[in-house]
Length: 335
Image 1 (cartoon, rainbow, N blue to C red):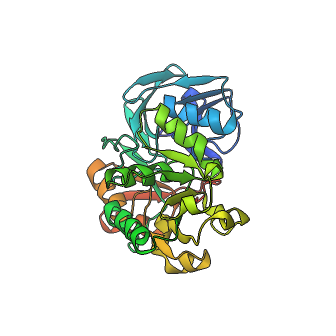
Image 2: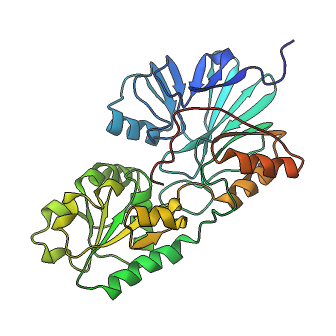
Image 3: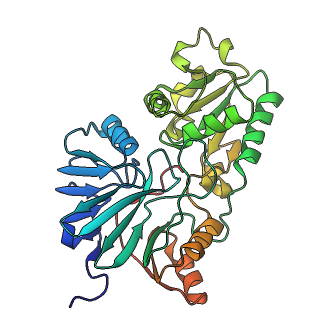
């Protein structure tokens, strides 16, 4: 008789499910992969078969030109892999199409969250709390200092800056998948219905979100603006790498903003030359991480990447079994 949970093995390049011969979010091409979401540190091209939500598969096709071997699974749908492993995809609340994966085998239940957040987000389906035996969680912001403010407060700061500097524009650095679309949707929800101007690298993903039912309003490319003057009093969204790039010189006296959970760290804002730090994250903060573990109430928590030590210590102090995993290839991104 095999030991409990011996069928799931954390390896440096990903999590391997032995009875099904399948990997979860592997860092290299494999014959069969379960993918939680479309960010590059979790989704890679070259797999023989990729099992993911339809939106994640669409994102992967757009970003990595992956089309062959795509196997879509809807939220709440279960698929049998390798004969006796069942995988069910559940919403993770991270970005469009992001999923937790519930794996069931030999009466044991394991959830792999990928990345997730608990805060409301009009661009993706909310996180679903699901009981399990082992809960595999990220810890990107796994320190008590990281508490994300309500996003409406940060959007209010952005709109106030626009009002205070009517002859300028506000240039917002935002990650191209998830963050940019969330900022735009929250601006619309706060009553800002003017044209929002985009760096060219943002357009395709925004259109994909719209194709999946996320309304983003009037979006135009900066390159299509009739003049520099047309951009005054406007919001411009670009990849973080463009904030201090030659591209930004075409903008009228931009106020430089950055939407990221890392803007809680003042040194990071100064390092990037950010005038308006916006603490907007698509990851769970410390309170959400600990809240989620308490609500799921697993027999054991595995911590995959980020600030593992503090979350591990929190579990130990609460008499919760936990361990940190040594996975490679997962990045902090420009969250």
